[in-house]
Length: 453
Image 1: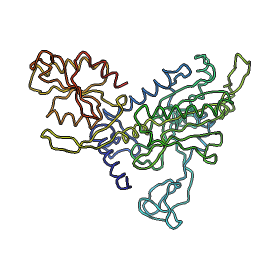
Image 2: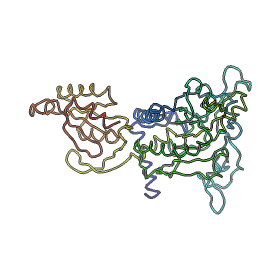
Image 3: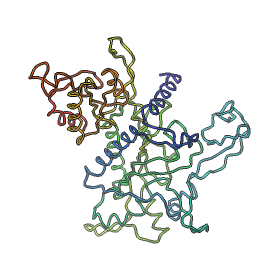
Image 4: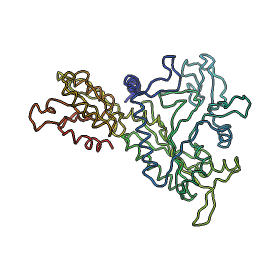
């Protein structure tokens, strides 16, 4: 697609997200809070499906990973040791013409002169470092000892709690500690819808190992993470692997790969997979004076483990799921006339609603009663939606537009009015092909469940 077509595509996606209840601007009735978003009824289901599947794959399906849920409020000593207090900055400039605050490293140049993307002005201040962390105070006092921070990443609580988790879990190397949680960065210029936000969520794994295992595990986890994105329905052709050059990596990293996705606004990072050596644990050992080492019972060695970190953005991945799923095709309306159909082609395991249930007519009591029975039958197994409003074709379109993979219609055949052999059967409609098949009600839970796993 051309740049203009990509921009139009993104406008359609943003519009659909608000219209159908995926994502809203936070505090919208008060003018909105820049860089902060609220997930609506469908968005929260999509987000939860993603997080639950990540947790299943990373923690519950493995013997070598355990979980943690660390606090958001963080002791300043933790972030001093990690380097965030002193170095977690972006270069900031002000435009003297329109008063905009901008990231210096993202300004466009014209004739070798940087200019403001808002007004085109060239009267810019000198770049200065801007710390991205949100600072707050704990308790009633206002002295420096009361300072705390909203964590800028989830990783540090894992490193700080490494020894406690090791002692209680009794794991042997290699093993990992996983966490899903909120993080906060005071971005100078939030942009691209939910992609770069000030409040966001991360899915992080710190996988601890012997030093000689680091590079092999880096390759292993890169492969596993690519596999994960394919399993949630993101097109492999839109995923790219960037081997980050040494000069662009953190100084302590021996290898970093960025998994990137082709958004309509360009190729951007979804996840980093980095071999961080033993830097983080060593920093906290030095700063706290506490041992964070590992004792190998077999070799009788004591050493500080190295770590490989796959770190993914929940919000970025949700946005990638939405962008990848958005599609338009043609389908006949109630009169057989072809019209444009907007369809979200979510993988069934990610779809917010798995199955919609429709009585053919809302004023036929027997159809409605049977439809409610089907709803009650399926509800313990999956998230379902009941809809009896409007023509059946329009109900199908509404569900296509939010990505519901299956629709069940209860009609007169279900009631046995067209032959006893069809009693207690329904039509099961597939979102993508729009094909329908006749199935018995009692088989629905197993049949649909097998398709959404």
